[in-house]
Amino acid sequence: MSPFYLIFLISNSIFLLSLFSITIHAHRCSDDFWSEALSRNLTLCKRYEHSNGVEFAWNLENNTRILQVMVGAALQSETGWLAWGLNFGPEPRMVGTQALIGIKQINGSFLGDKYNVTKYIKIECKLLPSPIDLNVSKLRFSSLDLQYHIIEATIHLPQSVNVSRINHVWQVGKVAAGMEPKIHDKTLHNYDGAETIDLGTGKSLSIRAAKRHHARTAHGILNIIGWGVILPIGVIIARYFKKGPIQWNEHDQWKHAHKTCQTFGYIIGATGWGLGLWLGISSKYYSFPKHGAFGIFIFTFATLQTLALRLKPKKDDELHIYWSIYHHSLGYALLAVICVNIFKGIKIMQEDDKWRPVYIAVIASLTFIFIVFEIINWLQFKVEQKIEKKDDIRRQMKIDTQGNSTTS
Image (cartoon, rainbow, N blue to C red):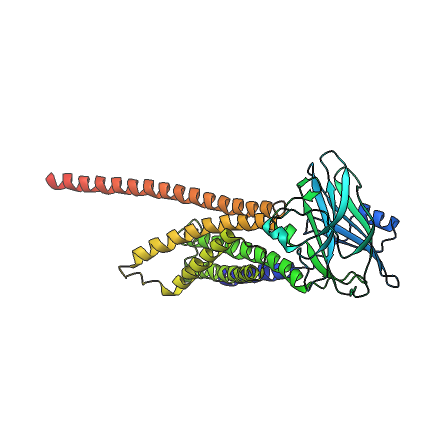
């Protein structure tokens, strides 16, 4: 099989696998939480693994419209808070939520109360206990163990509320002062703490939110594969498969393989970049400007590098030497920026424990290949240098011999 078709097959296989890996992130509740839920006659349960691992169990009595809820999450800091509530507005969001918040006090006690989350929290007004538009009874905040805490409550829902399409919001924070929960971390795990749900079935109706999560995963996978794996492989092919240590010179095989890698790496990476652009536009309440700026830089100059495959000057052109310097310098600079931005993206996704080790292994493998090939090239250069030096000595001796013969 020729290098062109081999790389084509590998690139497309990776691309398809990345798309199929974007699965619905429905998760079962943990065994301990589910056991507690069953002991309270709660029949439905969901775990939001990608939103601080918050778990939500409930039971709705349709005739009486009584909703029993239990919400749990780990609070690992000395103080902290767990919040859950309903938002009767048009979309699931923090502002407008009628919330139940449990606060872990520094003295080890647990206090829970009701909070009306208004727009004034956006200008850093204090969030303190206040009346809400919900009939709540049996509100309790407690712990199942040293770190895992739960909110329990019984809510009498108004007849006007559509239980088959209701917005619920949850949040976890690390700092509290008395009964005031302080601002939570500004991460995707926190921004994703909202959903439109059918309380009768547990089905999520937040299609847009689900799409955003899947798009983030696809964005990360495609950019890592396209920008972070295939493009560097193309650089290795161009550097080491042309003159050695591996020679693909027959029918310019190295050139076809290099172009194939760069083309498919660019297509896959650009697709991931497009998803990232959509994510940035569709995110109303948060942004990551540095990550986005690096992404634009990578896409722009990767596009120039790809166009250079067709627009480069001919070998006999006097500009060819300057174009080669530009092409190689920009290529190596791009690889460095790509590496930095991938790690930035992994940090934003908070997938350091999963994605970071994998990409470090990829970089280590490519670096190892680079070093091995560099050593082989250096050794070959030294051997050729010695051979050339010996040849020069032989030629010089032959010239001297011929000169002596002529003199005689």
